[in-house]
Length: 418
Length: 65
Image (cartoon, rainbow over all chains, first blue to last red; front, side):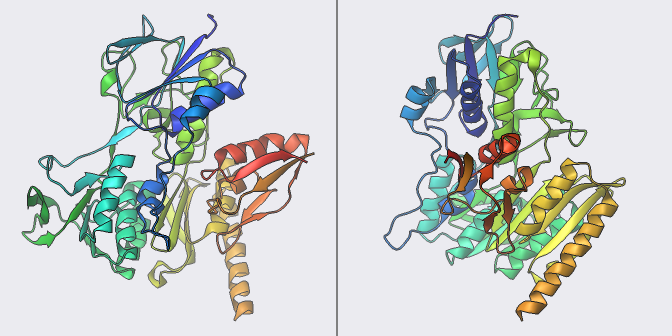
């Protein structure tokens, strides 16, 4: 095997950054090139639909941009050749070259972490006030409108859209969510829990309209209203489109990589082509912990896969499988929603609390006789105990017994505090 | 002796650390992180390092004391 002298990382968000940092932690002292399509240095995305959209503090300062590292840290401490502002446009796996603009950048090892891009509504290009929320620039544009007191319509009742509606409400603005499906969040949390979580919107003064599509977004230069398929219209100064993302793989057409819902990889995040690994939202890999193929769109997977892909790319003979119990969280109103595992279950059972009361609840997901997932709403002290159980392959019966112990303990604690 | 420290100004209680190193971390009912112990033995170092790397708010650090 040839020694790696140049590691190229395509994608300068979380997974790409973690790839670079992990490479240095292994002691690798060869060249590293980090390619980012955006002009910006790496930044953290979860705050962009949450705290970053918030109002100014008492001193009048708006929330700061969540940068990860300074340019000096990347260049001087980590020794990275950072190339920002132009995307990679082609990959030649025979010649081991990545094309960026007019440059062909040679690699010995390659980590692809190009992530995903927001789906857009066709026909809204050029209409001011209509944005997806994926990048820092998107978030800055949305925040400007919120600052101006925009009447907000969110299209898509997924996590991102729900967080934005929640932020608008927190600012005292009118917010409406329009969702084409009859129940939101089914893919992420299953049918029953999707409906239960969505009930948080009405409880907090956001109008949620499910089962109705958008027929037009109208306005003269800037958005004025959203027209729905049932003929009704909602006045709006800001429309945020949160209808999902598409893995960013167009540039890999003809590269020889297997593309199917992202880049298909094995459990080592290897694409099957020598030297080429993938990480983050773009990677469709086999997760040995759950025994299923997955493409994650969450922070934890991006961070861990970035590091794992770089380590394996630098030392393929000692490659280690990357397995995880997926985890994501979402903050709406003053509620924290957390999910671990997989929603692909034979049964979902509410084991503590009651969604109708809007407080705190815990639901468990069963696959066969195994615990496969857990959802908590304001159950921060519960959720990770189930993640540990899922990691260890814990049984459904044990999880139910544990849940009952926890429920009783919580009840007693509440009774004692009255 | 290596110890783990928490910057409570950064921590938002997401709990990834608890799932990776439950002997060290637990999030309470109010969503606040409790540091159950700080001193790290050689056999525990790897799990605590994973918790440090897994923290989305970069609130954890391992220091020599």
